[in-house]
Amino acid sequence: MKQFILFIYLLLMVKISPAQNDISEKGRDTLRLTISEAETMFLNKNLDLIAQRFSIDSAKATVITARLFDNPELDFSNAFYNPDSHNFFGPEVSAQISQLIRLAGKRKKAVNFAKSGVDVAQFQFYDLMRTLRFILRNDFYNIYFLQQSAGVYETEIASLKDIVSAYREQVNKGNIAPADLLRIQSQLYTLEAEYNNLQTNINQIQIEFKGMIRANPLQYFLPEPDLNDLNENAVSATSYQALIDSAMINRPDLKALNAGIDQSKYNLVLQKSYATPDITVNANYDRLGSYIRNYNAIGISVPLPLFNRNQGNIQNARVQLDVSKTIYEAEMDKVKNEVTANYITALQSQKLLQSIDPRFQDNMKKLIEQVTLNFQKRNISILEFLDHYDAYKQNVLQINELRFNEMSALEQLNLSIGKTLFNK
Image (cartoon, rainbow, N blue to C red; front, side, top):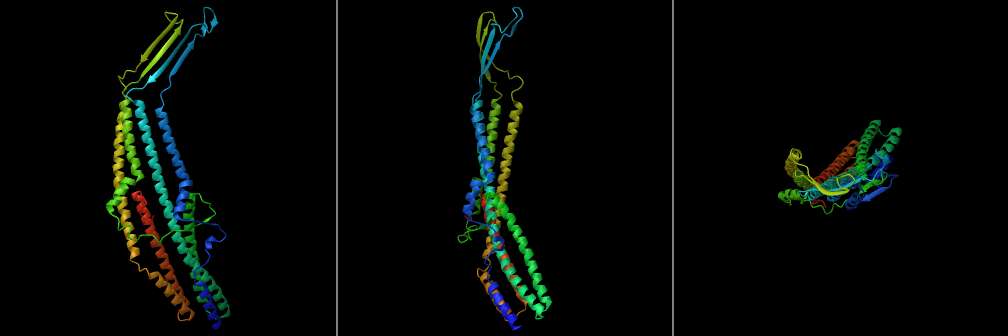
């Protein structure tokens, strides 16, 4: 029995320290990035952003088209067959060239309408960037804190595996009751199942994260955040009204909707201009087909706006303008509610973390050390030791979850105000 106690003592002295190797990293290349490095890769490589940039180029191409003048039209004819002389392609020819001239400033108004489409496309691009950037940053911190929690499991699992091995040997020698071994094995299997679920969650988030920066899927991502400069009073020190004003000014989705209102206004002006008919100027020449040998003339044609004055499209443009204004007002209300909710959540998250004694974790570590010493001295049973260690594990997991919730709340607040004001 003394040899067994000495063995357990040496075993725990080695295994109670944090695990040196990340189990999930074995056999895999690692990708280490800071948040700024990840954002740079995201901006340069993300395919969703690249695709959205093409939509801006497409909108700019419509401006080029709107600036172009209508092409002149040439009409030419030659007599094909003369039944009297039985000749093909006789001397009689006629030609006409015509040019459409748009009135009421239609071309300029079409250009303005096309330019407003470019503005909408650009703001939609920035809004997509804002949303994807939030997902990127949120995943970055989520992966980091989940990996910190995984380290606790790795340490305890490694320790319990060695203890199970030692207990199995002692059970075979009859020094320990089999029930104690079963209790430790049950704890080990529970931890392994929890650890496996945690790693599955980490892997799923890593898939999304690496996809956004187009990293090698085989690499294991290890975030390197800088949490030392985090201002725990940043939210409470910021005016609520300042956050609302920031959202109204900086949100690209609001800018896109506002640009959509301008686009609807330009469309209404353009549709009204279509009520004014355009004229076509033409020049004609006819050889041997008129009362004189070489007939020539100039002319003008214009449709008479007796029935169709583009009434339907004008009315539809007015309706679309009203719709755009209504959607913008509704989105403004939604943004205010969103900022308010995220502001309250961020305040609560920071307040909760501030309420925790900063010495709490250190005290818990010291407590575990004392518990370990008492177990080594056989003052407490293995079940009591495992209960204390499980309590320590739960504490670390909860602290990591609270810290991630704080970071996520700050990122949500940044998202809602359209600006990286917190957690820069």
